[in-house]
Length: 87
Image 1: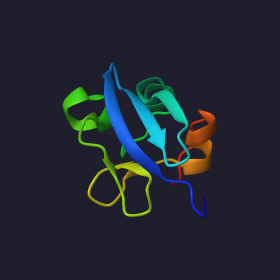
Image 2: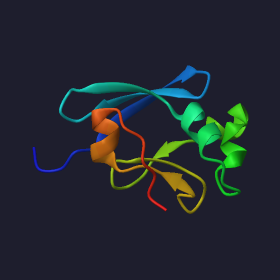
Image 3: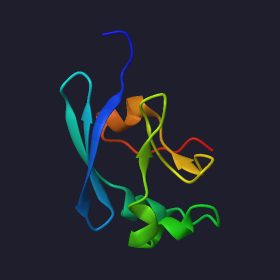
Image 4: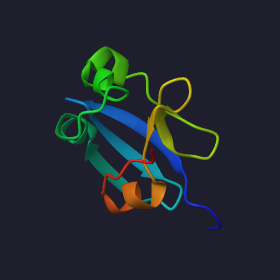
């Protein structure tokens, strides 16, 4: 496998998403707790479940929010179940 990608992202409720990677690994991640613990004007809106659920898998195989990828995380970290955003 050349590049790690997210193949599937399923909303599990309570701002939690189960990610399935192209190597077969899965990770269930509570993004809401991280957003709440790291307030930022650009990210706070994603505590609203309606806005949070508008996540998408971008062209690089990463999960993102917002028209301009306002919030996204390094895919290698997500694969390990760690949250550290790219700003």
